[in-house]
Each structure stands twice: as C-alpha cells, then as structure tokens.
Figure 1 (cartoon, rainbow, N blue to C red):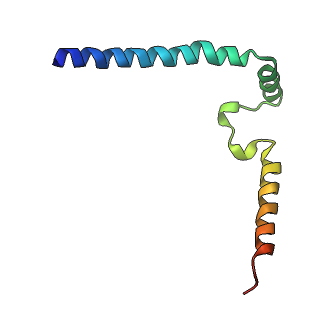
Figure 2: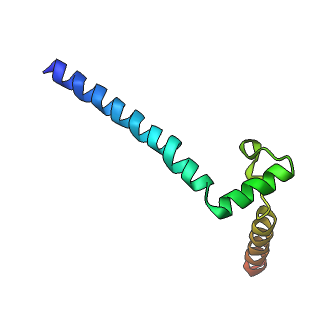
Length: 83
C-alpha cells in the first residue's frame, strides 16, 4: 500500500509539473502573440520599461482608480452625520 501511495504522489507531482509546463511553454507564449498584448509589450519596450519590474502604482489606470477611490471616500465623509 505504501508503494502505491508513493506512485500516486509521484504521478501527481509529474502531472503538476506537466500542467505548469504547458501553461508556461504553450499558453503564455500564445497569449503574448495576441495583437493587443504585442502592442502593449512593444509600447513598454519602446519606453525601456521592464514589465517584470512594474508595480501596480506604475500602471496608467491607477491614477483613475485612485481618483475614483478618493471621490468615494469624500462622499462617504460628507454623508456621515456631524457629531
């Protein structure tokens, strides 16, 4: 019984490695070949930006998101009853 459990664990590990390999070697490269992603990667490359070093605060959309968040906070503060 122990040998069978060991085979299942080894098989599970091999299956997980195979799944991750398929994602890394097939799915992600296929996604990178999509026109929108290619355009975005070219835009980053033209500006000398390393996408792996980007933080969420460096994204273009973060300014809009932060502005909306601050507006929502201000509205909440104005709707609170005065103490």
